[in-house]
Structures are given as structure tokens and as C-alpha cells.
Amino acid sequence: QVQLVESGGGLVKPGGSLRLSCAASRRIINFSTMHWYRQAPGNQRDLVATLNKGGSTLYADSVKGRFTISFDNAENTVYLQMNSLKPEDTGVYYCNIIRRGFGAYNYWGQGTQVTVLS
Image (cartoon, rainbow, N blue to C red; front, side, top):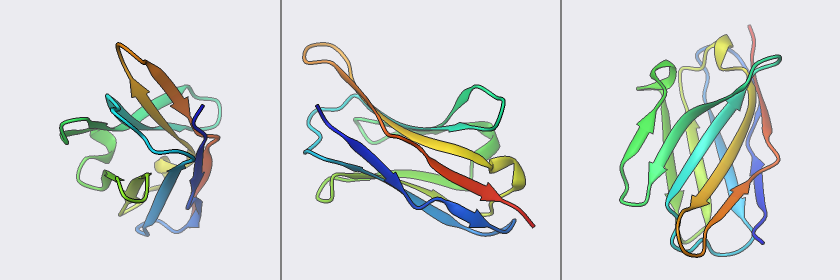
């Protein structure tokens, strides 16, 4: 079982930046997709960003052009660079790593709080 530990959340003013990290306890092998989700208070968990095995990325419309998902294979860490933050970006951010098919797995982190407040 792989543990995912997120960090990098905090309190930031609108327009500011944060970089979230999601460190895996063991080497991630043959993943299918990596994701970052956001859950605002009272809301469902929404998909924010996806990194596919081939390197392509997808973003929610609300974060396009502001957020960037990446994976550092050497560090075994998934990142979410968040720029031009807005109050509506506030929430708990979770990373998720999935392998489909043979040897399937579905790992989640514990979440990290991001608060964007004037």
C-alpha cells in the first residue's frame, strides 16, 4: 500500500500563489492517471486537474491557465502549482493516483487546506 502525503496548503491573499505537493511513500509505477481534487465546505469533491500517463493534462474550466499539474519521477511527488488564486479556490485539496487494469490501485492523500482570503 502506498501512502500519499500532501503539503503546501495555507492562507493566501487573492492573486497569490501556492504549490501543493503530494509525496508517495513508495515509487509510483505504471500509473494511469494522477489527479488533484478540491472540496469546498458543504460541496462535493470536484476534479481540478488530471495528468495522464502519456503526459497530457486536463483542467477544470475554472482553473485553466492558472493551475499546473506535474509529476517529478525522481522525487515521486505530484505537484499542483496554483497562481492567481481566487477566493473560490478555497477548499481542501486531495491528490489521487490511479492505475487501471492489471495490478489496479487507487491511492488518495489526506488533503491539505487552501484558504484564499483578503
